[in-house]
Amino acid sequence: MNNSGVKNFGGLLRQNYDKVIVVVMLIGLVFSLLYLAVKIGMIRKVQEQHQQKMNSYQADYLNAALLDNQPYEQAVDELNNPFQLSVWSNAVFIPQDRVWCIDCRMPIHYAAERCTFCTAKQPILRDIDPLWDTDKDGIPDLWEILNKMDPTDPTDIHNDNDGDGFINIVEFNADPQTEKKDLDKKHGTGINDPADFPPPINLLVVESIGGIPFNLRFKAKSTMPDGSLKFQINLRGNKTVMAKLGDTIQGFKLIDYKEIIVKEDTGTMVKRVDKSVLTMQRGKKNIPLVKNERVPYTEHTAKLKFTLDDTVYPVKPGTVFDLKGSKYRVKSIDNVKTNVVIIRVKDNKEIVLGASLK
Image (tube, rainbow, N blue to C red; front, top):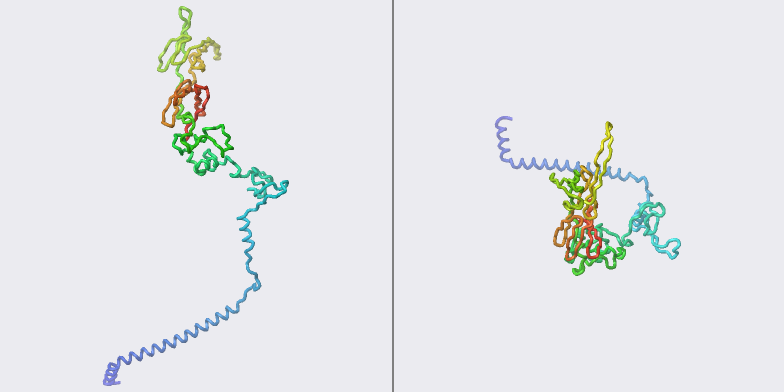
């Protein structure tokens, strides 16, 4: 093609450019439709092959039965409703309802403490034990329910429901002579009645117990010109006093003296050792002082607290104190048991005071 032909073709192409574009697009569209038709045919063929293969499969157990869930439902029902024999008229064989033993699962009497088959101990049933105490606070459930307390709250024993100054546990224990098995009747004092409260002595508790070491030591004996005896006694702080029988030193009275000389064999010689004993007394207690030996005696003291107004009474054995118009004398102080024994003066009744409840 010469140059003039090329120019004529180029001119013709420029004049019909839009028509050429349309023709090219139509040709592309036709080819796309042909491709889709071929692809759809292939997909259908694959689907038909897959369906034929699936139809060829067959279950191994065509006659298998459906799952029976009745045994499962029966087991659940037995767990929710444990076996129990009802009351039978023939009391010789089955006197009352029975329950399973917690260990061997044999039927036993519902109130049995131990299994009659395996002897395993059984839990106590609340409804047959009047002293059952769910919260372990010292007051049985029955009494708490009757007196509008919460049998599941161990802290309510420290409440004062009626505002009379006595907490609930003190009012419950106010009458220990009442049989606790009769809790449905009156026991203690009324925790909801401010006019019904224990004696004031019930609010006196032991706050603390201490001790005063015994610091008197028998050092020597002297014979006076008239033949009487005087004894040298060391006090606290190395102070020394001379006293005779019948004299009183720091509340201790000299009541007796025995001269005792013992022989001690040291291995090389036998020597005489003075083990004379000077006896002192306070109240009804005698304290023997061996010459030149320390006395392993401690006098205990205590602080008693009246919890109604927090008054504190420092006492020791023999102390007499007044509480709300009544006089009491301290009999003894026990630092091991942490209690103090006092005597009511008007009738000599002995009362044991313990530590306060925390």
